[in-house]
Length: 365
Ligand code: M6R
Image 1 (cartoon, helix red, strand yellow):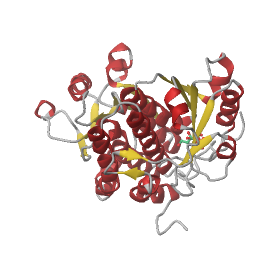
Image 2 (image 1 turned 90 degrees about the vertical axis):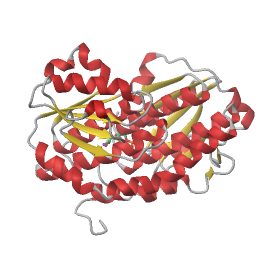
Image 3 (image 1 turned 30 degrees about the horizontal axis):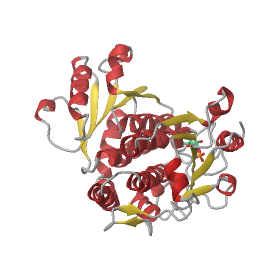
Image 4 (image 1 turned 90 degrees about the horizontal axis):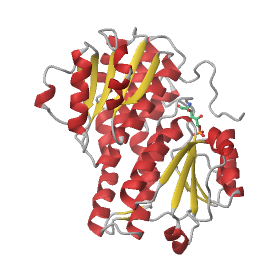
């Protein structure tokens, strides 16, 4: 049932070219630069009347929510608030009839997320579920939804559900932006970038062996930092969470520029620092952060997309991912980070599919 893979987690990581494709199937209209989302269940007028969006989720799903926030704000110009589901209910949130509450959950059964959705509904918001498990409680109770179609995710560490969540958020953003004021050309550009993802993910997976070597080098570390900016700040949080939950190594994700406000004090030659640095709009900024880390002798593991002369000799390890539009970069960056966490955990003898103290779905509040 693990399809020849030693663990479900590895199988699920390797399924991503297909699962990402499945999330887009029948939904992406390349020629029109548009997306069709049959389950949304919101009349166009009502969708256009939405003036604020709240996205609520837990764990990995909360990380995809942060990426969604950036996408929607950038392309649709609607204010978005991301809330931990467990916090949402207890702080008298501002919800109006023009609030759309997007709820993200792989399982569709997470107690905190379900409770947050019920609370949003009670306060008059329209709810939209991004759920993987068909027929789950959240999927049954939301007003409309976008199923992820990633197939069953068995490993406790969420991998393929995360990339599908980000794809679903991009499809939603595309639809809303095109209904508002995004041009056909820009719509096509995003649609084409989405369509290329499966093959790009496959090209990363084909080089998994390179990541296994990095894992061998750092498997004994007791701390890790993950840095990213813009769309890849949430990818840094997600990379750190993956490592923590399956290898029990302490790891933190930070927006790269926050280093100098405290955490840089942690850096010495024992500290591996994973820097997510694709050639996007904040690339120049992150290269200077990399130099700050290197000056303190931190060990740099960089995820990049091109040669960069200013970084020559500064990177201890470099892993290249293909280029894409800024908002999709966290999808490609997260694949090597999933692999890194996986290989380190396996090399440390950890039970990757069922880490200690964790359950696949957290049905207690
Ligand atoms: O099923 P959900 O997406 O609602 O689950 C939310 C979190 O419990 C989940 O993402 C958790 O953080 C994973 N173990 C992360 O890998």
